[in-house]
Image (tube, rainbow, N blue to C red; front, side):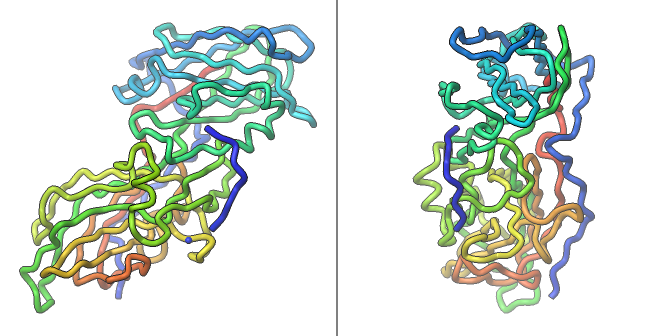
Length: 363
């Protein structure tokens, strides 16, 4: 995780199924008795300046209903920042925790109105916590897609509380990323001069991907330092620790029978209102050869005729955008030009990225 200065730079269409609402990152998540509990333990740094008043116990519960959450949390770092909820919003305490096997931890804070920020799987091994003096300092931190790991994504959350002795408070956390899932794909060239053609040497990748997003969700999600603005995946593949997050190849040619490639790509939110050079829409690009010529099928994700959700446009955090794709004719030769619904038909839906398991942090 790093501090960055924010930068900005880039029929007949049919949606064949209804969309589903992607829950907000701040939606309260419910504990189920069958959950597996994980614990955290930490010490308050001796040099940390605490505000005046009596200390209170903070209890942190991270629970899981299935394996991914266990892998994501167990033994991983959890950073907790607590700020005074007043005009200055100065820091009250900071602790780095390590997930273990007990259901709770005790941490130090002071009584009164507080803002609590929790960060799971932070991107830096060590925070320079003495440089974070207020809530605005944390709000100015950007997470970096190039450092993300889809198996252990960074997650964060913020709540406002009134702290008392031995207080216990629930706070949800969620990933900053979202998933673009190519569930199925096929070709239907039945009305073309090439009815038996196949899409060969095919790949899928993302373009105009935000590489930076604020740690604290701000609800804006404008593009920040977008990658692959030239329509090709080369830039992000060279710069990312996990290039498979934004590029994948199909294991077989694509014909009239649908294939199910299980391609999962990942990106940060993008809520641009207009597709301009400075605020480009994030796109899913299908690339492949038809009769020896290379074609591209750039699809604006959750926009216009390829919209999937009635609740939002573009990409929000912690959502899964599911594509069932039918290619109906040759595509474009410039990967920066989006195709229309006459060229590609999608059956698209949106759902929370991880509907199960659900995650709850309890203070």
